[in-house]
Length: 501
Image (tube, rainbow, N blue to C red; front, side, top):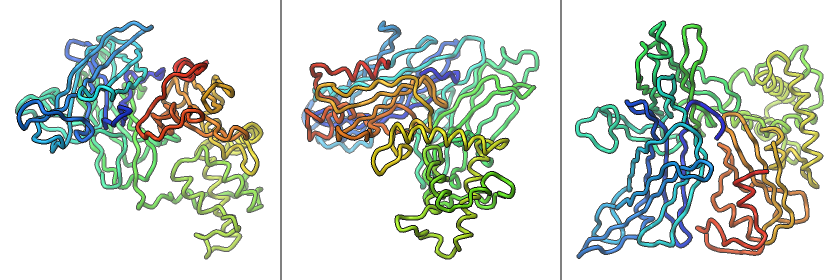
């Protein structure tokens, strides 16, 4: 992961583990710095007991064991590793009554970039195993300003009796997801700021800001913002709670900034999350009241042309914008089912206002220039990725191209034995994330219809069975838990995915 936020972003995983059964596990990991100025990685794993095999270890006593191995590599050299056997509570039956199996580890690790591998094995069913890989960046230099990972938490209490949840005399219970459903109205975060006493030794104070921003466009959500002036110190614990009951459905970042007296950002970190609020009204007033007089949009007088142009915007629209745009676009019969009480002129004006509002939020100084540049890109993807009865901007490759720009490399394989034709797109950098890959595949073998199969970009489709699906052309399988088929002659998709070219 190339993007440096001073720290690794919190990652959430739902990991299918084996081919014979399925261990259901959720894991988060975040980096921190201890009192000795040494960085460490904190992992929190929650395993569903019903997904683990229990065996009789004594009369009427049953137990399951999961082996968890974490390996950190640089240039194929192991820097550090951890291996633990996580035993379940004793049960009186092979069907456990425990709610979950929990493990927390704190692993000392130096600063740098590492290949991170986590493997899970059910010790009572050794054939059930899986490996998860990622690239992580640790950046906590001693005596220099940095920010820990931002950890969503379920609750935080003063320590009475130390436990695996104890940190700085508090019991901190992680929230094991980056998804907040409609019924979850509060979002709590825990983070630490280090070495402000060195960074601000002259003034002795600084300001930190915590806020929610729209993942799609970076705009700050106005009512979800905190700011506080602090005295410089070796470590500052940050805990904030936000009421997200009125936050519209969508993708967001929670951001922590440290600013100096000149209001310059000296360090920051952010973590991605999703909110679902389907019953909440989604339309801001300025989307429907924009003044289009004497603007380029006023010259677009055809309702049909406006409909085409608005549909072009789908790949780069926010969730809120997509929902509103769907109301403006006619159905296959040319009818506006949700706007039946509006005249044709009123509908056209609504479309113009929406279209103008869309581009002023992207480029307030020159919205027409932003639109013209984008329209040229739409023309390119229509030419490259279009098929009969479907323009290129509606394809998955077209959407990715328009949203993230042209990839730094494309590896196209059309004749690999056993696999469907596929393309791996590699981006050095997209907003908020580096070293990102997309794999598309063509199941009909004839047209230019490549579907998105898997990506490691945040907010994109993730399918940990993607290798099995890619190779179903000659290796059909009805096993829903199978992540990967055996290697086959001429197959190089693993190599191309791990080392894009």
